[in-house]
Length: 111
Length: 119
Image (tube, rainbow over all chains, first blue to last red; front, side):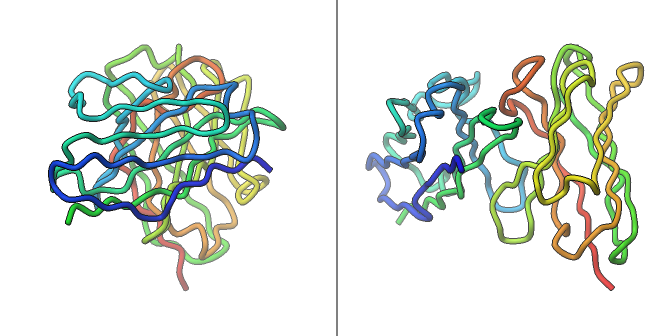
């Protein structure tokens, strides 16, 4: 079964670059757009990256993403304490029926 | 885009609940919609999908046969009918707009409505 795997945690000090990975166990990740969401405790998720690598208006250009083969990455440049949140990758999986597949989420800690 | 969920609450196992989501700020009838839930302290779990015109529906294995999804484009409203609720259905339920008319991924989220199933 198609699965997206993220590291459960990531950390960095202010100003550092942090990379969060999202890997798929199948090449089907190449078929559909990958999205990244940012979620603060007690809040709804927010779209951070759409359609593999697009930043919605209002998202700082410190955030970028890429997708290649069976993996994708979210890169946060010059990380700040305000970036402490949980980050999820997601894609549409239509290999059997149809569903949204979420990664397990990566909790970012800024030390 | 604004999505406002309602209908959550506390119910006992086996009972039913109907969630609603009123959409505004975009042409509701042109976009597919999702329900996504998040159990306390857990990650995001996709629940259900309906295409822009209601002709296609998909459900997570965990809710198939118990939950149904529908939409009323005349009222810009999305629904989730939840029957035979179980303790493991306890979660914040989010309504989410899809990025297109058919299958895809959410590109906007509501604030959520909390469902608690407990005896």
